Amino acid sequence: MGTDEFGRDIFSRIAHGSRISLRVGFISVLLGTALGSLLGMVSGYVGGRFDMVTQRVMDALMALPGLILALMVIAALGRGEFPVIVAIALNIGPNANRLLRAQCLTIKERPYVDAARALGASNLRIIMGHILPNSLAPFLIIATAGLGAAILIEASLSFLGFGVPPPAPSWGGMLTGNAQQFAVSAPWLAIAPGVAISLAVFAFNVLGDALRDVWDPRLRGAS
Image (cartoon, rainbow, N blue to C red; front, side, top):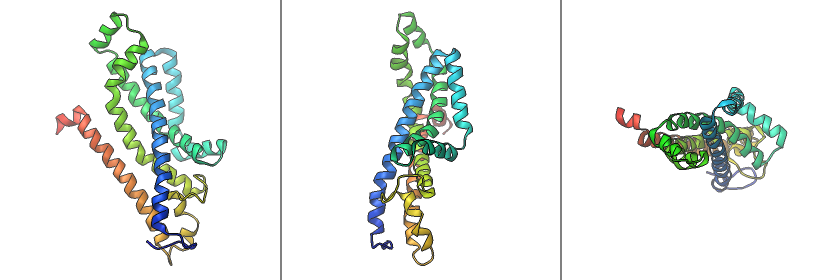
């Protein structure tokens, strides 16, 4: 793959940058889907004003373009790995919230939930013992599919100069700066990280589609 203008090996920087891009992606997806899903299950089960307020907050977050929301978070918290994780989590959380809320609204009307409620089970026990286990499949599907989006957002922020600051070799950061200046004479500076981002996003999207095909009973019946 060659070297950059400082003599650093491009392949080594991509391999090292994968630690940053994948770590940010995994942590942000785990944080966003976990908090969004938990809030969605509680919101769907409790209902009332709590559900109304929660869904209006989710509407507000989803109304903002993802990159604009991420830039607002970074403007408030500053540059660094943690603000990027928070920004991506806020982009992914509302989708998980909506999906798990809809799942909870369906499951809480099932006969076994009514039986548990009649036996005196607490709301927490019903949520953790009945609703959560039956919602794991959509949770894992949206988490896996969100990994591709998280990597893409991190790369976009780093490309714009708002991501993980240099000299950390994140994939998006490798696309900016000298990679643009030497686009003609040394195209591998931009091609190599671009291919890494494309392959990672494609792989996680395919994995998410495969998990949905396996775990979604409606798709199984259609096939």
